[in-house]
Length: 386
Image (cartoon, rainbow, N blue to C red; front, side, top):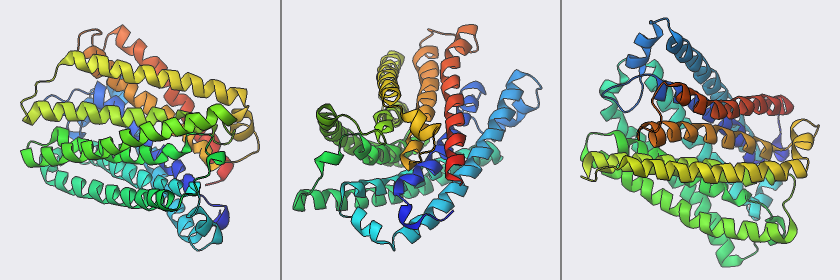
């Protein structure tokens, strides 16, 4: 399907959602497969588990199938969106977009490509034997990739923000939503990417560069979060939220997940190399705060969208909106951080024993959200005939 002038950069959220779903299935391997001596589960730990023929073998095989399936969809949709965007750039609508509030939607592009780096990292870790033995050689490449993604994110945002500050023209009448926070989402994604080598590298220099890069982009995200959530809610209180942009109420959920994981990784990195012992209790309180805010925004967004009949119009009904794919990321993000909350917040502190009945019962709500997210993803994918 060729969209040309009907295309919008928000269509990249379809690829982003597929990539997020791929990573979400890695969480089962990450936290259920034992990986003593390594910070994450890799092929060398997963393969022996597959041969055991028990429940964990089934869960591991199940997860690996879906990691591959959604990674395939991620790359397929990424290629499709990139081709569509290149055609869209030649249209008059692109020129208009570059001079409107909607210019910020271009941030969906570096956001999605940063997710691609994470998907590649997961695929390599899960399916390439012995990769972890040379991972220290890969961390500098990962840092370079995240620097490139961060550069393009900063370039797009600075062009947009400079134009607004120098010439004005920001249209507050169309800002009665939180869609402007797509830029914060992108910077948070770059931040959590930098935090990975910052947490896992055994070399001080790589560790420090990763932590510094993560803090840099997290700081930008937090500063913009303060500005844009204030402006967005001010306009929504005055005019109400527009029905098509109502899923933007949930955008705070993936932002909190990314910044939350970045903080956890930075904490591990500081503990590893900077002689700053990590207090397990701080992980409990921090992850509890993040999950609490996510639940509040999750309920608020759902009630508003139900009130506006968003799901009947744009998910179950005939209307199509690329912004609908913004429904996927919050579901993925809530499930992913839920696993961090259970394992780093509760299990690390002895509140819940790993592999206990309570442990698996706590996973059920997050697994249900993941399931519902997959259902919505395929409903939306069929509507757009990707």
